[in-house]
Length: 516
Image (tube, rainbow, N blue to C red; front, side, top):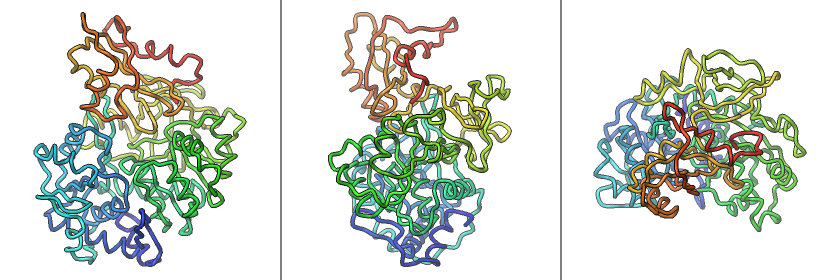
């Protein structure tokens, strides 16, 4: 298989009646997945889409995501998944920046799109996934009116397949362009690294599909002819239920989800016998939580580290290096996966010695093509074939990678990336705020939590709750500060730059790493 378009074609030929997707009470075989994606491709072509056109989707997880993904790539278009947790202005920015021509939206977010529809400059067609709405196409009739014959358009490995938006250090998201070649290469490597995959696997997909973690994990299952069980969103009770009833073999979580499962009242009665492998990422797992999880789920655990720009995982800490009693390697995120070169460099780009902290860089076929319409940002991030991650860490003499800090100040809360610049930009608009800095602080539940340190304008008595409410109107809920501290002034260096490390220090005192 050379492109994503080949996945449904191959399995429709090899195992047409095997179930590819399960969503709530709906099952889709590989033959149906192939036919339905053909119809979507032809319907998109009928809208006048040319090669490279962008197609956006704003919806909770469902089987339709993969049908639309495969339909888009068969039409040689590019799918743009939009984070459904974003605030309306953020959604409008992403859709406009991508120049999306067709927008799929579910009922839960139809009101949001109706609110901003007049601002969507390039959208020619809105397709409502859950029924009819004045002026919009109803997904079912729109799809079924098209032919189920494969359009058989040549799709190239170097074509962009999916464009996923990452939060920006400047406050504006950037579209990371992932080619078919990068996507297929990444899921092939993952299939051979993360356990032994086969068409007998039952794969639970519950992480958001607008994240590379969710969309890649679901596509790994389909690449291998497995049965993908799709959950609309993370729900610990439903996860436990589906593991037992669907006989799930493989799952991917962030550590917070594992914690929620273990805390759920039904956990003790859940049958985990089918479960073979739990892969987790975004942050290391606390040893106490690992010990409890291993004792309860009785399966293998593995950690991955990666970014949207690297098409997901580039390091792997295998089950053999997971020791619930603790070991030095449990503090690492593993070693580079096959086909991934990694190095640690100092501020001058010189490679560091083992144990010395610097910026993590990688060279691999998984790396993105570049940021959409942002040549300067691309040039800063990709140099001589190496992607510079913005994460600080070190490598030991055996090649294991340890995350130490984030050079770009990014906060990871419950698996969601939050850039302080985005939050600071929103808060600076408040009339009572004279100065503000946003940092990540330790959080037992989410790994890190967003904190704002605010300097009030003279005479102001603005409260934490008022600041949070103000922020919520323009940025996604997970970016809103969970707490606000007030200060007379913020620490700055002689050139005026806020000393965030100094701000963070009291909250991270006693921690052996500056990120969770």
